[in-house]
Length: 333
Image 1 (cartoon, one colour):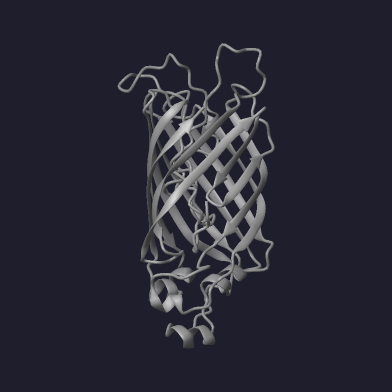
Image 2: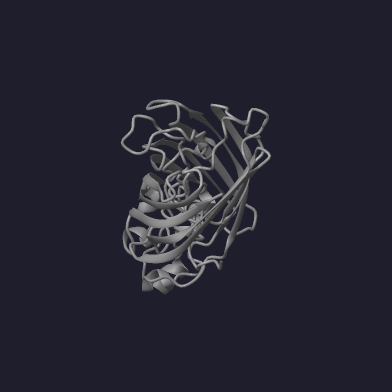
């Protein structure tokens, strides 16, 4: 897959849309086969509604679309670690042309996730991460920690707004960092719903914006039946000063070229750059969320923080309100 010339943090149900519909550890939830179908009183293991793999940056909460990982078999008591699995998803995403734009672009989305001998890994948009804490079979509290690498392609090529397009292009940023979090299974509605907390911290190692970002997230997901799942999430992104200067401030040369006013407010202090709320759902065509084909869909609303919303590329040429919509198809085996 080639990288589009713009920002893209998302991976697919949020891979397709950009919001965490299910908790980060939903992928490891158990889903016994004797649970009733939709309309019954039981609830199945929660799938992780992940993100859209459409090559944006990590600003999109990636857990929107993809369902949770195939869960453990209760009758295999000899197995110490959670079941090995692979899940792939593809679809389309409607996203802003750049972070803060009011123009839209339809993009392809792709997502890959798996687990081997208790170690989980996933792609989330242009992110790749590996959980170094092994997941034991049947555990109810799942701690996560591991490395993450991300490519940020915001405004690396032409954009639709003619004024913003006249600003200097930004170069692809390579970011590295860590993620950590915890998910509890069996919280509110049943023994299978999940509540998760996580944080991702990234530092530019390519010398582009030369700064850092941090994104705390809380998400909740619950199965409605053996074949249906819904989830919601909330997060905010904190940006360092260099990030604001590189992507949102406009110097006198940029102002003269584009006609947009000079602006330096985004790079003056570390601050919250965006708030997001999202929801997503998954429906198993096979009748079981743990295997086979699954339909995915989700939506995410984002609001730029004050200093970022006041940037001319947002206030004059874009919008502080940021919507992402996505849909796709996943296969889990």
